[in-house]
Amino acid sequence: MFAIEVNDLTKIFGTLVAINKLNFSVNEGETFGFLGPNGAGKTTTIRILTGITQPTSGTAKIFGYDIQNEIISARQSIGIVHETSNVYDDLTAWQNMIFTAELYHVNKAEREKKSKELLEIFGLFERKDNKAHEFSKGMKRRLTLAMGLVNSPKLLFLDEPTSGLDVQSNLIIRDVVADLTQKGVTVFLTTHNIEEANVMCDRVAIINKGQIAAIDAPEQLKKTIESVQSVEVAFDKRGLEQMDELRKLPFVNEARKEGDKIKLYTEDPSAIIEEVMTYAKQKNLKIISISTLGPSLEDVFIKLTGLKARVGAAYVSD
Image (cartoon, rainbow, N blue to C red; front, side):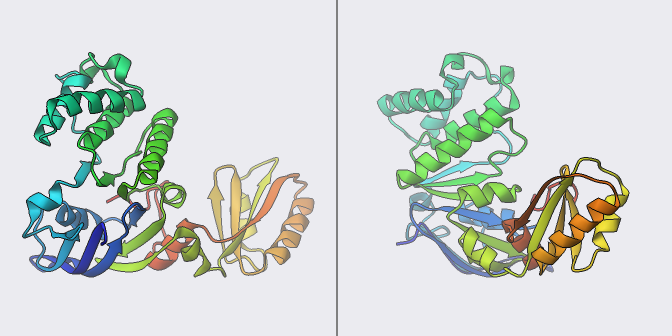
């Protein structure tokens, strides 16, 4: 039995086809990433899988239960952590946990035990009697995740779990997700951070214009575009003209700034390295670092979605 099984799932809003005959399944105990550009259909899919929105046609099953016709049975196995924190600011962290547990009909002894355990895991137990409005964004996010786990779900939906968080909160959430999957919990993850999906997910689905463009393990997806190789170089001095000059070198297909480095896409890395060495000598530059790289999950995403422009790193916010 699959944790999630989707067949020909379609949702139409007026003349807009939000998702078009989606077919995919999620295995029990895996972390499944769901990526796509703005308007690709991610949010619509999640709303259907969690029983919030009805599909136009097709079926979706949660552990064998039809989300439309057996919604109560399906939802009993689900935990949901939305992109925006849904804590009650005027309640304490403890009160938020207990209230959420009551909504899930967790018995008193279990909800107190589970609330204590989760607040400790997320580093919030010492602040359990503080009202949520006193918490930072990272602390609220951790509390939201703890609330989503209080009913011990078999399937956890995580919508942009680490968006805009501090490093500590980010690492805690990643560690918790890894621990959950080791315990057999299935995690359905949407994220705008492609590297996060690369690190956390067993498999990734890339959705574009309402259809699945690809589904596979991150490393397998990378192999589909092995021709996309690159050389990353950093010089001791940086200038605005370097990007344009390096882009014009022989064998360079594209140049991109990556922090303090420049990434040169090519089909012949060795030839590029020679060209870069010559360029550095001509410009009296010292090469601080230079390395060859295979395709990244980001490269796969760009190739499959046809996305060419970006603002910062926000490829996949939906």
